[in-house]
Image (cartoon, rainbow, N blue to C red):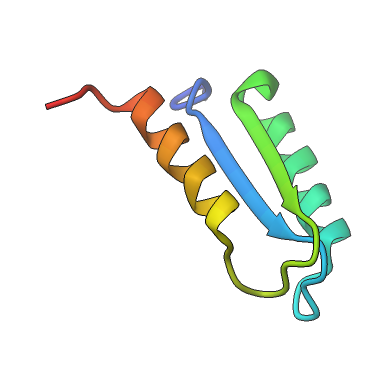
Length: 72
């Protein structure tokens, strides 16, 4: 019904994830683009990262949040 259609989404995925292959992450991102405004979906991958996080990913999350939330 259009509610939250303009919500920003950041999806991160390790390229070496043995539990959830990166292709499934990419498929999820494409599905999200069909549900919300496509330009609001960011899909970032991280080489060598398994089913975990890395400093570069955490920096991307920090930057994503800082762009969306007002500074207090």
